[in-house]
Image 1 (spheres, rainbow, N blue to C red):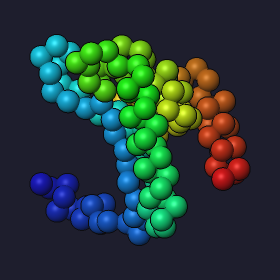
Image 2: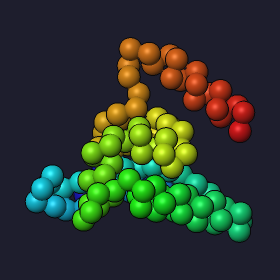
Image 3: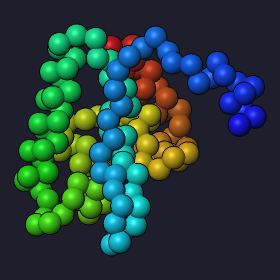
Length: 128
């Protein structure tokens, strides 16, 4: 509670409003507790086009799940079985360093090629 009392500004809501999409989280005896993987770190939700893009992403995810999941398998188990990279390619998302599957770790960025990854991210931001 000390941190909250001292840093109240850190908990204030920002001006950007949007969504963060996590997929595959659940509690199971077979694998253990799974936190959902962040597949869309942040998407603004200001217009109807933004909402349609979110619905389109959901439809792609459901279609991919219907084609690739085994009987009685959930999304998190499917992602674990086929691999997160294959899942993201299947639903048409590019890998972003802001995606995380485990808090405080990042499975997408290797530190041996850190400069290259930063250059790729900066190039994507400049193009957008």
